[in-house]
Image (cartoon, rainbow, N blue to C red; front, side, top):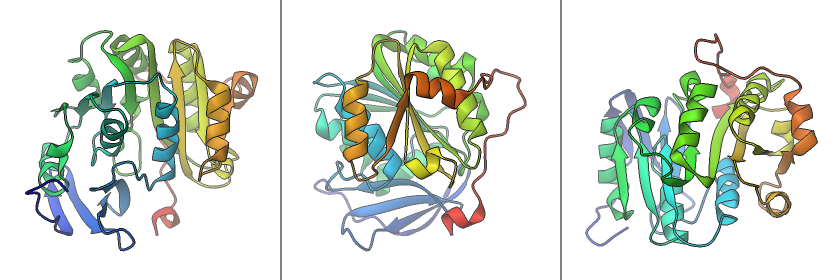
Length: 281
């Protein structure tokens, strides 16, 4: 915590869209979990923002670490406790962040209880994902992170071809998009979302733990995309050698994964998968 920052108070807090719970990590003195409706949304260590508890966040960090050295200009769609902005600011000093988060009371809670003010050069737009993205200038982001959930479900309006085009507008030509999604048996939603991303971005990879990729259990998958080439060999080795021992699927294997699934477009009747109750106990 920064000087003068008071100790966070665990408990349940009202926010704009319901309630969230702030839980202390009993294994790490400065670790905190932000949870909503029983679903863990974010984890932060207030003294060590490079400690990433959730596997899918570590996979996103693997991609970010392989981007060109130096500070990044970042757009984050979905705020939570801002784990990735904290990580990028710690590992790449001088980085700038725009965070789009529709829940203004949640933003205030994270500022007050989880020391968001300590993250330099961070601006929050309190809007929905599509409205907020429309306010961001063209060709201004090196990195866009789409990690927006309502409970444990990704909003479909943020998974369409039209929205991917708007994210591409914000990204610089060499910029990278990261998308966090969740899916389970059959991975039908993941296939359609990857098909959607590949309509806009030439270079795409999918990262996940092997059991999730095989559809054996519900979990998170990370899509990395760019109009420029991705460091696929390095990313494959880094993902496989990390704590998650994830796979990186790309090229012909990714084409086979998509297996002709249709991209998601505005107006399509698509439901994002809901995790089985046992996933979060």
